[in-house]
Every structure is written in C-alpha cells, then in structure tokens.
Image (cartoon, rainbow, N blue to C red; front, side, top):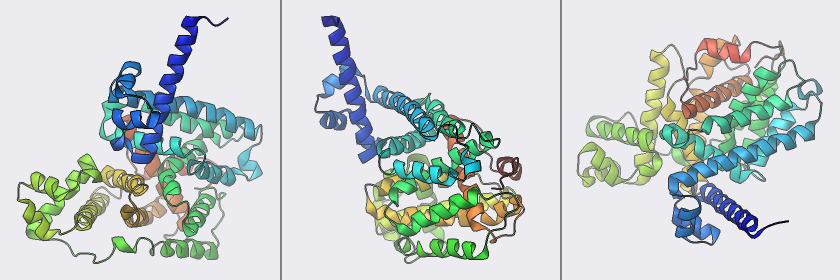
Length: 398
C-alpha cells in the first residue's frame, strides 16, 4: 500500500526527474552555456525556486544531468545487448551496420543524450572539477561496445577503437545528418576502420572516398573565402590573443571587446584589423592550425594540440544552433586530418594516400581517445607506439 509519505517521495522524485530532463533538453538546444536555472525552469514549467529547492544551484543541476546520462547509457547498453544476442558482429560482418546505426540514432532517437554527452565532454576538459564522474559516463560508452563484441576474440581492442571513433564522430553525424556526401563518407570510413588484415583497399574505393572529401569543400567554402596570408605586426599579435581566447574560453567568448581586453588595446584597433566577427573567428582558427602544424613538426609528428580538438567539436556543437559556424566546422573537420594523415599512414605501415579511409578512421579514433583522456584528466599522447597498439594487435588491420 502506498502511504501519503511514499506518494510524496514518489512525487518529489518524479518532479526532480522532470527538472533534470528539462535541463537535458535545454543543453541539447542551447548548449551548456545556455543552461541556467531560469532557462530550465521555463522548459520544465516550474519556478527557479523549485529547482533550487529540489536540485540546488546550477553546478548541482549539471551534476544531476551527468548522473541521468550515466543511468540512460546503462539502460541503452542493455537494450543493444538484447538486440544483438549472442551473434559475433565481426564474424557475421554486421559490425559496420551497428556502428553507423549507433551514430544515426545519436542524430535522431538519442539526439538529446548524444549532444549532452558531447557538451559534458567539452565542459570536463575546460573545467575538470565540474564533472568528477565524467569518466563513468565515457566508460559506459566503451562498455557498450565491449558488450556487443563479447563474442569476438578482437572485442576488447575493437571496443576501445570504436568508442574513440564514435566519441569524435558523433557531433558531426548530428550536425551533418542531412548531408548525403558526409553520410557516405562516414560509411566509407567505417569500412576502412574494419578492413581485414592484409586487405588492400581498392583504388576505386579510395578515389571514391577522396571525391566525397572534395565535395565537402562546397559547404565549407565560406570559411575559406579570402584566406589571409600569415598575419604580421599588430595583426599577428591580435591573432595570437584570439587563438588564446578560443583555447581558454571557447568561441562563445569572442567579440571585438573581449579581444581588445585580452590584448590591452582599443576596440577600434581590433575592428580595424578584423572588421567582422567572421574575420576574428577565421584569424583564431588559422592561428590554432599553425600551432598544430608546428606541434606536429617539433614533436616528431605527435598529435597533441588539444586546442584544435576542442575547437573542432565546439564549432560543430555551436553550428547546431548557429548555422554561421557550419562552414568552419566542416572545414576544420577536413583539415584536421589533412595535417596528420601522412604521419599516421607511416605509423601504420601503409603508403600515404593508398587507403585514406583507414587512415582517417585511425586519426578519428585516436582523437576520440584523446578527448576522453582530456575529459578525465589522463595522459593524451598520440604517438607511433600508441597508434600501433590501437591498430595492430588483432587480425583486423585498422
């Protein structure tokens, strides 16, 4: 029998869950930056005071959202485990279908959870103390693939690989769900990821893969208009400050005023060199890419520029609500791999350009694992030995 006190407790629990789910919806629509007690109260149809009473302050609400996502992910693991049964997805050849369907669900049925996880990952990177249980959520993502690959002798390594790939890929599968060329490119990359040992990529398949890459130059063209030469003098100094702002606070922090404050100059000086917001963003992105190329050159081709990795994902998430960021997100996605694919092909022992799908998959998985490391405070080092360990201890060549 349900007593009045039990009914009250159940009602309170239900109300708290409704508030947390409203917060998840706000994060999915506006990002973490757009989540406040007021915006959540509006979404939930309640008062700020009620949220404060039931949950606490904004930090407590973020933690509650994280706990809810951990719970949802554990439930989802069970659903997918039941769906697959005892089938070995590697031996049966259905693993690419599972990977692509998982990402497609992230753009549809799982969209809220997928975006919240991406936003939480970036928040954990910028503010490590804000999400002490972030590792648990990301562990659940990898455990999903461990469960699905339990019948495969290659399961443990492939689970880490696929979890890393999906963490890096998910925001772009959401952002570019309507782009046929991108979806085809993703399928090509997943096939490359799971190519069997000793299998040589058909030259026609590589040609097809690169044709898809080139076609993405069309929606990214706006980010390349009037590509500037290396800035000099005051303009170069300002570009460095813009890059530092992006790295430290994200693209949402950019404005003529914030750049002027960071550089200790008048706002009019910033506007003289960078008249529009697009000019500011472009200058910061270009400077970060120069730093990435410098890092690669000076560190023996180690991929370690966390600023570029964060910015790429941040632009993808920002573009979900601000289409002006779409060209930058696509352009950065394309160029990030361009900076390292030759080094990765060398590490993998394949001729540069001979299997770009495979190389792309390894780059993405490595960056996804790097994102996980940055979000959980563990070491991130994309070096030859790491990539070989990720790709070389099974009968599948990645």
